[in-house]
Image (tube, rainbow, N blue to C red; front, side, top):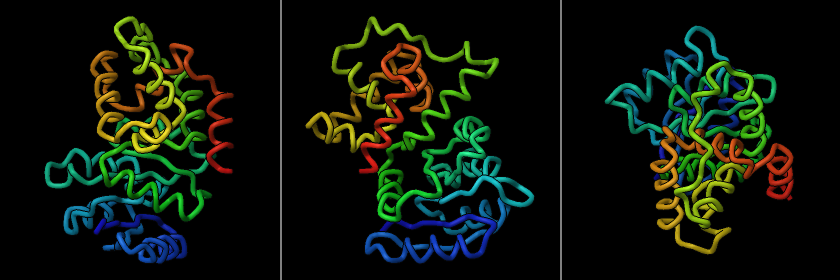
Amino acid sequence: MIRVLVADDQALVRGSFRLLVDTAPDLTAVGEAESGEETVDLARRERPDVVLMDIRMPGLNGIEATRRITADPATSGVRVLILTTFDIDEYVFAALHAGASGFLLKDTRPADLLAAIRVIAAGDALLAPGVTRRLIEEFTRLPEASSRPSAALVETTDREREVLTLVGLGLSNTEIATHLHVSLSTAKTHVGRLLMKLGARDRAQLVIAAYDAGLVRPASATETRRTRAD
């Protein structure tokens, strides 16, 4: 059973997400939090598998709450799935550095949200294509953009470059495995090798490397989002 903590400052939103989670036979909501401080406290007490984290909450915001949860040895195994909207994209990059495992838009279809929780709980990272595209646009405006992983892909294989392209499009490991008709473990192995070869800290930097190398363009990410929505 995947245990989920719901964090949002709006009671109606929290209640809706909790009801949705509890409709799935393999998921269960273990609590609700209306502030960042409460989220951190509940994460320490309940040790959920996944936290559905809002960014804008009173007091301690979702970014700092994510940082405290992922940095604390007692809750380092807790995965954080950020639920965001286009008007707060300036926070997405900071949330990645805080240790968030994934991002979805709040207008995501219920079935897709449940699937995302399962992906995050399984240890995969997940970036919604729309968020991925805007993340890259934000990243290219940052002064520290020069510190991103090298786009030189000389040491990567053709298959690894194909996997990097799919990562750049926002696909999860499970979706990559399905797309390439390989096992999930094989997909994870390819992603792991890419992290090592490109000197990338995390999956988000692989996304950036894919854009740097010209493997993915914002337009292609947008098209992928449309295709997956159909």
